[in-house]
Image (cartoon, rainbow, N blue to C red; front, side, top):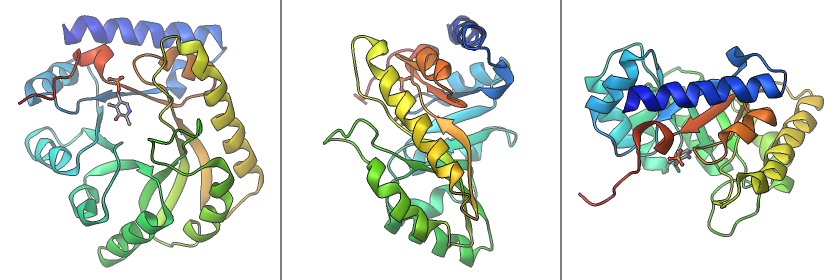
Length: 230
Ligand SMILES: *Cc1c(COP(=O)(O)O)cnc(C)c1O
């Protein structure tokens, strides 16, 4: 099933790139494997997938210890400061930096280990009560502090769009995130590059690609529905 699903998702990514005049090489598919067993990750790995997303630090760590070394792990879930240690040397990219306090805590851990940690800033672009992330108007003040942290490297923005019936409703949010990243880029802040836009999930990744996503995070569309009952 994973194999067929992947073919379909990859084809839809190609089509979305075609429609928007983009090179499919600009778009990284992150297979979101949270709650899913190692055996399913291995199926995706066998199809050539190397980028996987997890939202729980311990789960990322456990899977990383078992699975091949050439996997790139993406930390995409809200990160508590006391869990940073689980992902620091394992995650290729932390997408979910949602506060200055968290950035400072990552800086502290990274400094101890003499690492430079690539991060994205999570933006609550649709201003949902229930979501983590910076509000648009907070991002420049946050960057003022975060850009000066020597062991962090800001590489772009991430957002989780609202859950909607019709994915078209999210186009405006993807457009707005892209606009924000262009505004940030134009300020030429040292240590800040807006090379990545992590946006789009199973329900709306094609639209996110049309609006400039460089990373799409697809779980259900590859691995099927998640069950949280153990
Ligand atoms: C679970 C999750 C996804 C994947 O969601 P699907 O709708 O299953 O594709 C993407 N991004 C984040 C941050 C998630 O937590």
